[in-house]
Length: 341
Ligand code: KG4
Ligand code: ZN
Image (tube, helix red, strand yellow):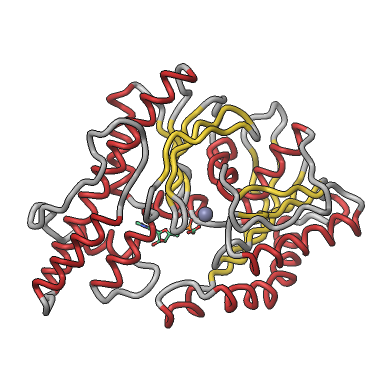
């Protein structure tokens, strides 16, 4: 089976074609076209919804044609069209969803509305052999949550952030240090040359029960330190980045530990821990979770960084998983700017 997937929930316009494998073990990415709009938003220090929606309109048709050509697949050989229907910026979601519905209608093929978070959660089953149930840590610019993935369409939230998302914290701290958007990768680079012990930043929620996150206090602590120093040297920036990253890593590890505990109480033993979302590309977070999983006797599955950040292959794959279960969507399916798993 081959599914075409469209992603337009934020600032990437992305289209991919994905197929399943005989025997049902993972999938193959036949093409994966991602066009980042970062340059168009950079001057504003974040994503501007109207600019995002217009940019999706400008490039989506071209990307669909290119994804099909690179996959060497004809439209008539596609079995279903999937699109991320939320959560995300409504203008962008509307663009991708409408294109997907139009194609499905014209081809007489099923249309599948995919939850963007579900797509991040299921990515590990595209790249690896992984049975349900497992735990997914979803960390991006807009979301931070831990989810028990019991099956396709069967998710239970173990914990989520009560304030900022992890990527948002990275981006805001980067802004304080005078770095352009998106700041996550640059904080990671700076941190490599910094002293993570110089600033003793708070680790909110660490040691508490449950698996919820809170990150705004950490961000505020960094701001206070920046204001105290006033004129930051390059070394100050490196030390701030390293100390911030060390704190957020500790918070994430502690909260995931809480999530594993919650999961074990209600679901039994997970088949592994999966990471998804742009922040999942962070090497320090990956290394810390690798250690945690080794201690807990758990498998840790971290998809390659280009599949952690937003792309069409993860939407196509979630669509394919849904198609196999017979979960197709009505053409009346409306965009869902908010759509908790
Ligand atoms: O999933 P994503 O591509 O888009 C959504 O927000 O849905 O995630 C983007 C976020 C941004 O906040 C970016 O700064 C962060 O992921 N990010 C990182 C790294 N790479 C991307 N944060 C920390 N370390 C990284 N290496
Ligand atoms: Zn995402």
